[in-house]
Length: 413
Ligand SMILES: [Zn+2]
Image (cartoon, rainbow, N blue to C red):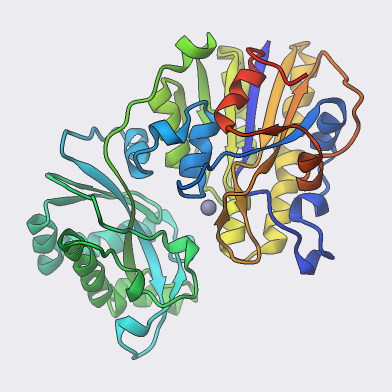
């Protein structure tokens, strides 16, 4: 038996006026996913229990069978695991995004956050911008004084580690939930120890805003990387072994360090696919081949597609619908064809980890629809995979029970 977990990040949504009050999932043409829904079971599940953040950092922990109320210490320690960064006692990890703050002569206090990803900055430009900061003497000194190291990555997602850290009482705010809002009231605050972070963010804007590297992006019509944003703080975490719990090993195919990191902490293999960007331009054929290859090696493979979430954050509704359709036509359909042609029985759990709302361009922790399919059975329920279908099906209070259903350790009927 092969077990396939398919996560379409942020696919679920609320009805959207531009889509005749339908959701992107209801609008998208997804015949294979709907065929699985018709033969299998569609229900709804809470992956982001309150009061934890509504986002992949809690939702994907749930989906991987770890109750976030017990295991969530913050997003960045999981991303650090994917990058092979070991956190020592007393360390805390942080995301340090490259962001776009509004242009103009107004003071920083009045500037709005325009993009949490500096317009989905490409790898080369991202490294250029980070290197500008790391080689600037004032910035380098401020980092040293605060005992912070920045680990550079070819994407908008940089990682920071602070030694001898104490993050208690500091409020760090995710930038993607506050697009279009004034930046400085959202800077880290709440304790004296927040000040070095806020100061580094101010300094980064001062250094980057008029730097030639930034001007080069403006001149090319791209969003400038003229700021950094600390968030996603957390201390080290250990997760229980996947094989001990479910009886098999597996692999995780994703473009997103967080998803890889949760897999790594669970003892799963992390598979990086060249050209997997986390956006609509991701390498679909490469991801398909990687999943297929790992299905020969393991009984469990997770395929994660970030594009629907990023499209929503970027305000790209057409892109979101396209991403959902491509998940069906370019990944799920060929995978199921291959499994069927190879005569391999399979069970599939497919879901959106959390809602990402077109209305706000931010995440939402409401229940999301999930789909369970078994190639050996046609339960004859009929129906499709979307939010209303999920709400009409069984309700799972705690998403960490989903893998028990996939592995038939429990059942709903
Ligand atoms: Zn997101």
